[in-house]
Image (cartoon, rainbow, N blue to C red):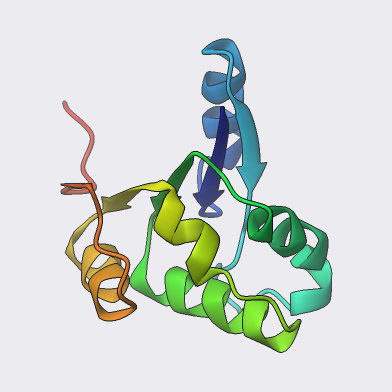
Length: 114
């Protein structure tokens, strides 16, 4: 199972956990303190355009940047994301997914248990 993670923070932890569970992680650091230029992650966007089983959205801005990056490369990322199970880490990521016609299957509040 391929899992796409559109986040920058804790991505190594996410990668390790996904691999430990037997999944193939696809890391898409589309957003950080500055926008990541499309050339830095174009290969990942092309991989995403081939489809994933699970998509984890961590920020609304990141979702928008991801889709815009795909469009800049002539890729339609909505089609493969429509086929994936979509999770949102918080209300903003969930809202943007809904606005893009890709409602999340589940939403978390983005906090860790203490």
